[in-house]
Length: 329
Image (cartoon, rainbow, N blue to C red):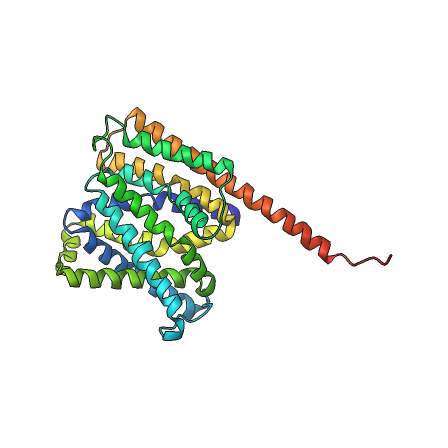
């Protein structure tokens, strides 16, 4: 098997894996509140990633780009790392789990599939990014797919409700921190940046639980059944810990565009597992909605790739021209 094939397998695996947090979180939410689950998830995640990172450094498999210093001079990076952790990870996870009180896990997964569009919206508002006509059409198609899903008369949630807005807020929380996360990763490295985010997510929600007087001991309820132990292992160790290493592995071999295309499998993964693991209904409108969202998102990513190629082409030509020696007249 070639490195490219291994990269595609890694990317597809991540696309399927990242569609299931809301499914595996459902059994755990039966015995603890969403905010306690978020704290437990990211506590396990930063311990897992911390161990992996330190072992990688010790064995020479990983390299540290720069030290993340906790001092006043580094206050800007500390602030954005905290925002990425508390908002981009903690609030994202908390709101998504909270939405499961009102909507189904498959609906949750489809709405989370809108994250690439929301990231570009943030880029449009803050960084001067521009949608192409094709991207605008694809984004509209994706929202139409979500609308079809929400308005399905056979849905268990009986149409649009507050849970859909909460879930949309979850996706927006992740998207708003995408550019800050990328900037930190460029300076400190992807794995180190995720570790810092998970630490801040755990500390932030731990402080919140302490202030509101939440029962930390309810986290021990995860040991009440083998299924819940498996679920928290998948959430904390697999999805929030090891998966980012697999994601980086895939991205290095098939590129950002390839992994981005594979992530469009998230809604499909959520739907399939929700049907088989949670017994959710399969309705014609739900199937149409998921197909519309996935096709729209794939076309959206493709349009984005073409746009980047078109921008890069004149720059390359310019570099070639500037590198040519001047001829005497």
